[in-house]
Image (cartoon, helix red, strand yellow):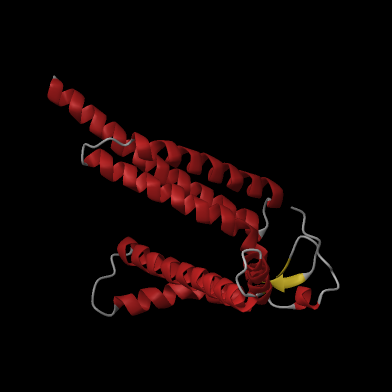
Length: 204
């Protein structure tokens, strides 16, 4: 089904949240659901997704920072959280040039890489689950197949981003994410190899 978009529609100039809510309202109206309910549900769903993503990302970054620098103590979580929020705050306040040369907020410049990083996180989570199952001596094949698919696709997406944006901010971020992902994958492979060698030694 093709949907015609009127560029002169006043809705085009509205905030993304309002546009998404209006789109959901139109979609739900197909099933006979009143537009006001569809609009409310759309705005609520998108707001929840954004807020939970920010909350989860901040918490995970704080945990990693505390563990990496061995920050212990009751109040170190506040320090780690403040440090974690410094970089996002910079991207909110700083303006950069996009590919066309227009001045835009920094967060909007790096937005194209969000899709790849979001799915990369899913692949890495599956990898962690596979490592855990391996240590427990359980079957991992049902996790390995979707994990390999997610990792190959997202890593290839990061390579495409790096090739397209090269040494711009987006390309550098993509390169850092690619290196970190490869590092984690190599660490997981070492765990599998160590397990294999231990079993061989025991059999001998």
